Length: 432
Image (cartoon, rainbow, N blue to C red):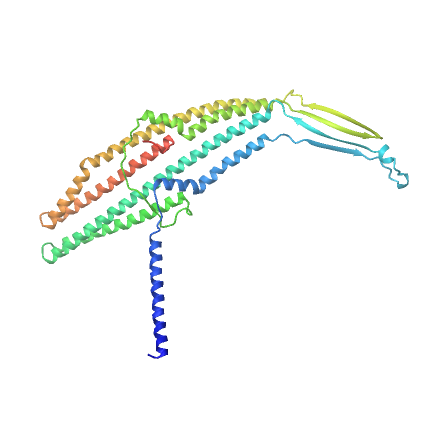
């Protein structure tokens, strides 16, 4: 072999080695990329929404705004610096001498400071802090609503996935029936009309799969919007299945927990305290402030000091209108608190009964209807394949089985949604 041939052969071998390495690297990268699908459970979805949901983050900024109002409330009045003068210098330059500035000039300088009376500053601080507490509860309530929306949409994704699995399973099963029917038609066991009806029924199963795929895509997009588009990739998936977990608490226990935990009710309770603080602030603002002035004066080579005190005489304006308004606002806050308590009791009662009703519906399916629909479908399919049942009987059993399965999945989803709604009504996700 010549040197040129050896070089050409070595080049080809090296090129093949490089191509192999590129192919292996690409295959590995593709496998890694395919295996990095983000999968989240419900708790992770809720945490992502709390951290990334833009509406909640905008609402949460209200707390910082309220804390800034606390800083404003604690600020004391600024002192006022005063200076004025009358130089008295001659206009004609020839009349000006060194004594003019000392003997003729007149000027005053000093400072004025306002002393707040009636403990205004402490009343402002107390009212501002109470407002921050109310704001925190209101933000917690917004988070409560977001958590329920995420849970609701998460369950919708689980339902869509379950329905898609059912649709694909039915399509696969019915495709086997179509294949068998074609063989029976070729063997002369069924008519062409029966075969055509079976093939037309196959279209319904194919359409169901397409509709279920669309429903899953839409449910995941809606969930991603709640989580924040930047928090999860477009091809994310969820972990979990539609499940049944009986509720162990009675209604009274749930209602008592709701009054202890629900943030909108706690905000209403704190609203009474805030109204009382604002009433005390209005009374404090009715007190007139005291202004003291220290003044230094220089007139014709004589320097003097003076101290002045002034206070507004509250003959007419004693802030009586604002005092009356804030006094009535206390009653309004009390009524709001009572109304919020009634709303909590009503919400918990309604959602608790909804959970119990959906509980009974799920148990109805599990008590035998699921097995009966499956047995009916299997028996009809077996009988039809052996010529012992009509096509209409088989198709009717197939439709009944599918309708029962879809209804059962919807019943499970409704039960899980009602549990989430009850947790929202109570204000916690830790119900047993």
